[in-house]
Length: 294
Image 1 (cartoon, rainbow, N blue to C red):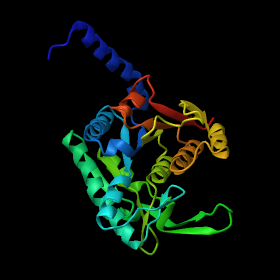
Image 2 (image 1 turned 30 degrees about the vertical axis):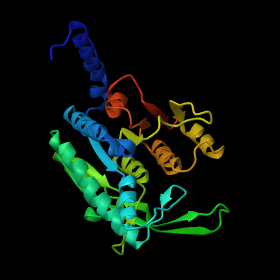
Image 3 (image 1 turned 180 degrees about the vertical axis):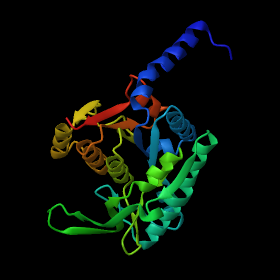
Image 4 (image 1 turned 135 degrees about the vertical axis):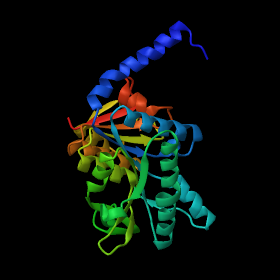
């Protein structure tokens, strides 16, 4: 197709706009939590893979941490089990843990790796059990009274992350694709919320950015209006007044911790927007909420 001069100039302007961002972020690590509609819509999946490859080719170091909630729910339904959540966390008995490992460590992880590789990347899929690089312990949730502990099964909280495996991949120009499964000291597998893994990994790697892909525009106020920029203290206020609740709790908690612990900026972006990653990282246009420490 032959472009008109006007359209060609528009495309050139977009490429030119990306240059300062490419220079600024060259060699920097960007941790991306991949989830929501971007993982289930074929066109968005294709676009995500292309975006990750492009970021790598222009000199950034993308690290992908993925979820897989809808896929887990589908397989649980096929075996007659109903997914159950408490405070945004999936209740995970031993049978559900088998499904989680099968879906996250197998089906979903390998699909993402394959898509990235089809578009010219060099992706490698791992779980936190590989090399025991994500050490986990059993998580207990606090009841509303703040006293009683709630047992939600084989759900883990992160004890430590060993960055050497990711660093090794980086030296060979591989793109890590990580399933959020941790391992206990006794070898037990733990299901860990993908947002929490992405946040802690971003802190451990000293990432320039943490990007959390969602099915919403970003963080919304009580009137449903998008909040494009927030400081850590403002986020604390949104927790306190109940604006942030339910499934957004672990996501925003992870974002807040990362911002407070050395990650330069955290972005909660709308994964339903085509090429949301490129828009957020390489252009002047934002597609979500940015959180900074101050």
